[in-house]
Structure formats: structure tokens, C-alpha cells
Length: 378
Ligand SMILES: Cc1ncc(COP(=O)(O)O)c(C=O)c1O
Image 1 (cartoon, rainbow, N blue to C red):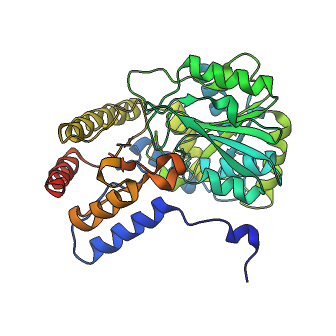
Image 2: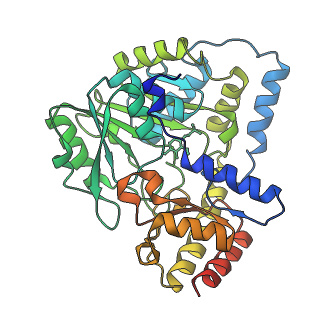
């Protein structure tokens, strides 16, 4: 009935768990949903206004496939100033969400039999994107701080690209310049592409975000992907973008033109306001996420759970091997503590000992979750 290519793609565990939590909540149970990957903040008002004004102004028709000129210009300026990437508006393609940017880039670069390296536990959608292209994932190892080790051992004749994500979902790891240099050296030595998903760029604590595309030798082999979902609390608006070698952008645009056409016109206007308007809301959200991270990580550590203090994103990734591993622990959390979390196995074989818990919830709910976990462990 269905093609092999589609049948190879498994359901997103995070979306499945979130749907389960919603169903349980509807049935009257008080489930704390810490399985989701979305900020619980409202989209800043000025951004909403810009989108509404655009609709009122009649901007409700098709737009150019690669995005409206004003947004591409604003993104190019942001990439030059903040990410030190020497790009112009012509080097930017806007997409309906960063997920589409990842999907289209992987389809443009990979083909049957090619290999894509993922570095340790990685976002749930990367592997399906690679599977859809006909390629395969090779999993790189990480140490206890989720930093790559022996990455060179993953490279074969078939390796086409390294797909990386810093700050990382699910581990919260942030790669420093030394790690990025090691990855870029490998890419240059073996003539590989690097796809760098930087969607959590601004949700970062006391660390510097560095774009690997700004390192020497990387300008012609890096596709940098970003979006508005996480840093501007715009998950439902579906707005993302990429920049990279012109040839890659050409084929990504071709794929978009025959599939989704382009990101919604008035959403793109909201994106211009997000980038050009005041950034206070971004700072306030980051500060609140940082307080929640501390509350939750130290709370888990006090119970004897091994948990790193993540450098970015809004997830903790504790090691629960002494409680039977991630699958068992996540199951127990839902059944005994009414807390939805994602088993680490959803993020690849290296995640089996872990569980991902999102702290995109109020401090009150996080404190309640800690009380429930403590009770569950007793
Ligand atoms: C690492 C990573 N990349 C991309 C996305 C997708 O972002 P968007 O909402 O812009 O499609 C997510 C969302 O969970 C993510 O965690």
C-alpha cells in the first residue's frame, strides 16, 4: 500500500508522547507535560502585531519561493553581525520552519547509499530525513559531557555530511571553538559538507554561540540552518531559514517550489519584526529558562540522579541507567508520577540510558514535578 521509502520512517516519539499527555489531561488526570520541545511563552506582542498588520494590508498571496526580500535582507544582516557569516540576501532561503530547511537540505545533498554522521544523541527528525533521502546515519560517540570523541572513526568513503546541532537537543551541549575546529578539520580533510542546525542559538547560558560556517575553509561546505520557533516563541508560525553554498540553495529552492512553495507571506513580515524589533523578550525568556534549568538540575541532583548542567536549549538529559534505563524510567514517570518525558532512545542508540525532560514549563509546575519524582523514587 505505501512506498518502502515512507514505510521506513518511524513516528516522532516526542509528538507521540505529547499527544498521549494531552489525551490523559483531557480524561481528567493532571499530567505535567515535560515531553514537548516548545517554549511555553506567548509570541511577543510586537511580532504578533506585525503579522496581523500584514494580513490587514492584504499580504495574503503567494510570495517568492526563497522568501520576501525584506526578510532575506534582515536575516543576511543578522548572519553577518551575529554569526560572522559573509552572506548577502541572495544567499538566504526562507522556509516554513527549520524542520523543512533540514529536510530539504538533506534531500539536496544526500543520495542512495550516502552516509550522514550524527554526533551522539540527536534530534528525532534527523534520522528520518536521512532515511527519506535513501542515505544512512552513522552515529558518532560522545563523552559524559556529550562532546564528540573519535569522530574521525565515523568517516568512510561514503560519508557525505556531518549534521550537527549546538546548542543541542536533547543534551543541551554547546560546542566550543576547539570542538568546532576538530569538526571543521575533518570536513576539510575529507571534503564533506557540514549542516549546522543552530535553532537554539539564543537559548544559551554563559557561553558563546559560534557558527561553524565562520571557521576558515568552511564557507563553501557549510549549510547553516536557523529559525524563529524557539528563540522567539514562534513554533506555530512555521518560519525558518538556511544559508549555504549557492548550488545547494538552488536545489533546496527547487524542492520547495514543487512542495511547500514558500513560508506564509504575513508570517515572514512577523519574522522581519522579530529580527529588527526590540530583543528584550528574547533576553527575558533566556533568563527565565536559566532559572528553571538551575531549579530542575539541582533538584534532580539532590535526589541522587546524575544530571549535567546543560549549556543551552531547554532540556535536561539525566542518566537514569541505575533506574532501568530511559524507556523504563519514562514509562514509570508517566504511569506513577503523571509526568510526560521522552525516553533517550528516541534520540538514537547513544540515548538509551537517558531521559529527556523539557523545562519549558512554569517554575511552579517544575517544582511539582520534582516533588512527584522524589515520591516515585521512594
Ligand atoms: C534541533 C531542532 N531543529 C529543528 C527543530 C524544528 O524547528 P521548527 O519549528 O523551526 O521547524 C527543532 C524543534 O524541535 C529542533 O529541536
